[in-house]
Image 1 (cartoon, rainbow, N blue to C red):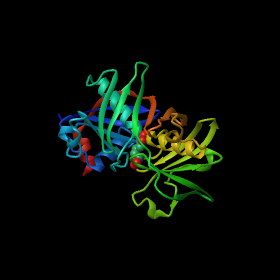
Image 2 (image 1 turned 45 degrees about the vertical axis):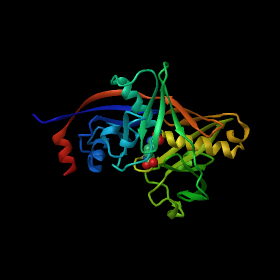
Image 3 (image 1 turned 120 degrees about the horizontal axis):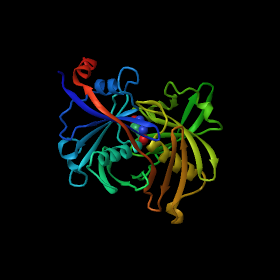
Image 4 (image 1 turned 90 degrees about the vertical axis):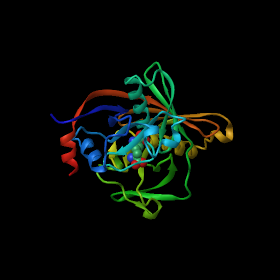
Amino acid sequence: MSTRIAFLKGHGTENDFVIVPDPENAIDLPPAAVAALCDRRAGIGGDGLLHVVRSAAHPEARHMAAEAEWFMDYRNGDGSVAEMCGNGVRVFARYLQHAGYATEGDLTVATRGGVKTVHLAKDGDVTVGMGRAAFPEGEVTVSVGERSWPARNVNMGNPHAVAFVDDLAHAGTLYDAPPFSPASVYPDGVNVEFVVDRGPAHVAMRVHERGSGETRSCGTGACAVAVAAARRDGVDPAATGTPATYTVDVPGGRLVITELPDGQIEMTGPAVIVAEGEIDAEWLAGAVR
Ligand SMILES: N[C@@H](CCC[C@H](N)C(=O)O)C(=O)O
């Protein structure tokens, strides 16, 4: 009988993940293995993969082990590595609770974007402290077909280009990454958000994610959109000393983003575990060959 690898499946506002618990970092997950697992037809299916490893057991996270016991080794659906995943870290925390490693309340999670504090609330929502947004200089132009828009550069640990549009349908099918220029601004690619207004401090977005394609939600993207919308609206909590809360609707649900006067951003939304099972290790090895 071949070896089995445990997995779970979870999502946060329908941004979905294959979860591979591997406390001692014993499972080899090269990019081809991640892409095979995230394949929606031949694999389990997911926008990305959450490799759950003890910080002390991972070379990229050892330096954070004193602050956070667990490291979110996040991968995009194509197998590429990303610095941060906002929905992923909320689902990661939900998994730790599900597995008995965490209880309601606060816990810390190490990520490539630093240590994040996550709050598991009684009502089932999960809030994460996402850190501060950075606004790299300049703008890029994002295009879909004949249309193009200026997009604000926002860094949430990972890169985002936020374009305000008249109609989310103008983003088209988003089967392919929208071209942006100058291309030299994002040599490693960028997550692109298309945003419309829904009401005061309330927007809706679609996103094309680097390494995953169009997804039904992106947590870092929703934070980038909220702060870009706030600045566009002339709202800056650092200047007024008043927190600003924006509601961001995504195709998979709703996220609530608050920017505090010190620039720290908190994101709240649901995170659920929907299934668990076993991967045939021989199949996975074959997918990599
Ligand atoms: N879906 C994530 C973002 C995942 C990483 C992104 N695709 C990238 O390459 O930067 C989120 O919820 O933040």
